[in-house]
Image (cartoon, rainbow, N blue to C red; front, side):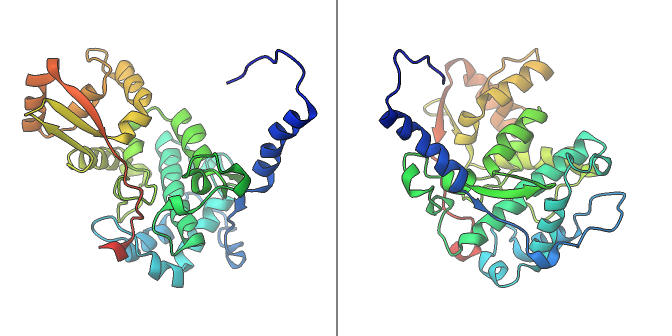
Length: 298
């Protein structure tokens, strides 16, 4: 939000405004791949490989989507190998490896999820990403900003934050809001982390599966017929415009509302109940649980 100044700013005020900018520049943590993995992907390639990431997920993620951070903290070989790939190659730096939108979106989803894990391990043991605080003089930043904004990861040679990756890369480049149910933020209320990577050739099917899984889980979405209320994950509140814009573009026959979007994926019986009450339906949002998605919490 920009506003014109009515009068000249005093030097004291100018310092107050400039100091946070200095801290922003110098208060970030750069999380880099292990140096020993720096030459892991120098050989010519025709396609980006998710082999290391697949091994990581298969051996360290439970059926419930929880991550064994303790085991990973002792052996990060597969994670470091995959992060080295991410750091060297991306759809921006090596577009020939990512010729389709599915290639590109699969990369960014997997890169986001993998670097979230890497970020947690940087501070582990922690009970929540909220434990990672912003720089001391920027205490007024939201509690999650320490993890999602002030940590910097490398993607295709460019250093950026998870916040930027989600909002300025994924949300701006891809209009399909199903990716919101594929991105995992290492927290209990996040969409479940699958035990297999998202792959270009199966991406549409996987995104549909994860969206249905999320919406049909009562922890995320539930309908109370007694008080005619639809309870929705806070994800729908934060990104409502993504869902409404998609509906407007792809389902102009529907009202571009959160209810309309949820009904596309709800089980038929629940969807029919909601439609009967739709005229009087109220929407409330479920508080988000930021507790770490750690297998040790089972």
